[in-house]
Image (tube, helix red, strand yellow):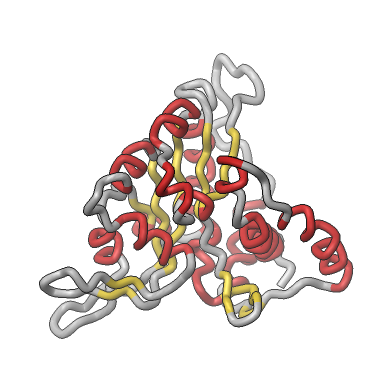
Length: 257
């Protein structure tokens, strides 16, 4: 969510490739028991207080590549396009996305892959082609382990769609029969500090490691690059890129830029 707010004005560079802070995250946990939705409700409330326009850029309903491009489209003639091409897509039922990408004529998978790469989005098959050249799209999906296993096909595993997602195992940490606090961050000042840091992050430009952090990055790079077998290897093939994006996000959110 914070990465969507920051936008394309911050990046880390790998050779000629820019990695922006738009992450794709998939929370995997048991239905109702993992509290995936409850956790997002708290985060959404914080981000909405931090950025007044947040709610307008948080959407749901991924179904087609054309629809995603339209939501971040460029101006074209009399069409004013989308004034702000930053977009966070939250999918509480991500299994519907996997079903959509599995259809033979679906354009959703290639468009999402291009969006993670921050490449211009376009489909030449439309009668009236639409482009989104500056789209900045982040995705949060919720799914159960059973659904993920049942709807993960060999094509989406091999073509790089799923390894563009950072997989998070979500489990309930403790039992709260009366629920948690309505505003657990009250009095902490976190929302105000986060707002200040995100505003500054939107002018960050290129983000790089300080010497000690670069040394740690070199130490862990070999482990991240080590290929794994089978499904785990396919889903973790972009571990280094996810590490860089998460490190950038962590530093920007904490105000180190």
